[in-house]
Image 1 (cartoon, each protein chain N blue to C red):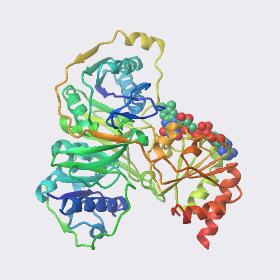
Image 2: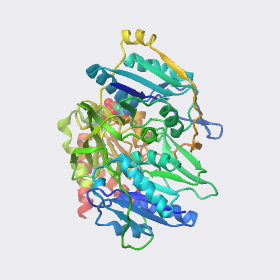
Image 3: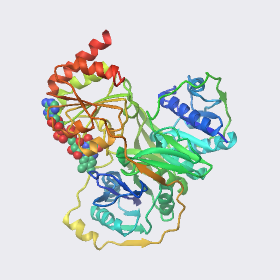
Image 4: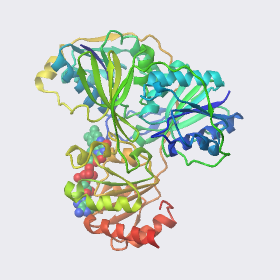
Length: 244
Length: 319
Ligand SMILES: Cc1cc2nc3c(=O)[nH]c(=O)nc-3n(C[C@H](O)[C@H](O)[C@H](O)COP(=O)(O)OP(=O)(O)OC[C@H]3O[C@@H](n4cnc5c(N)ncnc54)[C@H](O)[C@@H]3O)c2cc1C
């Protein structure tokens, strides 16, 4: 079984977000980067588990400049066998999907996280599936191999559903799929020797890109209410906030 | 040139999310001097009501192949409808299904795509839409230059508005492919509004001490007609189900009212909830970071404050 996992680099979850150049550019000063949690905790770990159970290989792919290599090495330390880095700093989901599609044929399973925690787009998986003309299951929280089929459970509006589909497929992974794995010393040592192939970009088009950013309006300040006066809170929620 | 919304009924009816979509499409169409139409995929008893929210023509399509949601089948049908109806802007909801349609449509229609749009397009010469990014820590503006555009609309991004009259839905005939996905089973959670759509959310954290204490949270939620949620450690330790976990790595929500009980307000928690219109924080620690993000704060022991709040809500509702 050949599995491809798409990983991206995102600011650490504790990062203070700000912008420079009139809101056009992300201010990366002092920002620590991590592997997008959904890609790491759910997509990658499940891929490694499936490989351990059924044999095969796990390749990770990242579209990014050399600064991504730290998260790629981490993916190799967690258990991926080899890696591809498409050497370009991406500006849109479309660009990422097209660059990945150029390297994504021949896999039985292509995994992404359900979304990235920076642009929260949840677009790459669906775009990739369309470019590869494959079925796509999004927001999957369970994935099992059953003979020639995949058995997938996913979140839908107002519940969950379980689906059966023959491979190959593209799938986006959500919470429940696997448990986070901390790479061990041996994994980290081995990761240094695993192949990381840097390939040139195909120069994919970008489509829509962000024109500018702004910060959300600040709260005007908290109103404190005495803990024994909940009638006042209810009154404020009704009359002032108009939410009940 | 026109705007088309693709609406997926839930359990045989179009819900509020569908009406938000209709309102968004109409506001967009008005700006561009065109009309907004709808394609309803599957059976909906209230399809004609989309007219009230500004939809000009409601096209309905029923087909056995639409019974299982296969994004490949759905996207091809929507792209076909857009072509047939001359629509250059297609809008879907930002739900699990909507998101998987959006990316495919972007490719199929060679369109500019923006997911999770959070307000009607800004007036101006260039088509500009905004979305919340960095899990709510910032807002990004997109200027779309391509004539063809596909968007997904965030739930609760705007209130449905009455902009027209109920209409008679018309059946449309489109080619529907065979799904490759086969439905094995479906579990519906009934009795409460799913978190991303909920207008009121009562959420609790580690301050609750243990799962056996959740009764007071559920009673407050019931009194308000709210959906329950929790912080990540609460879901991770199995006190509450995973689907209740809100925050940066859980569900991102933007209800009108978010009540946080015994939650400290860590940056990753705030990221998923700080778009809520009104935030109430109940915490015994006056230094809890959540108070900085709150509109109303109560410093006190939640085991005393929450039942008191429930009583006050009941009293208000009965008055
Ligand atoms: C990569 C990453 C991603 C994360 N993603 C998320 C996420 O998506 N969502 C999320 O929630 N967290 C997330 N976290 C975890 C986050 O950092 C916090 O650890 C978590 O939100 C804390 O949960 P809590 O507020 O319930 O618990 P605590 O921080 O332990 O807070 C408990 C609060 O309860 C109060 N309290 C205690 N007893 C009482 C009482 N009797 N009456 C009133 N108040 C009381 C305390 O004063 C305290 O403020 C993430 C962390 C990481 C590293």
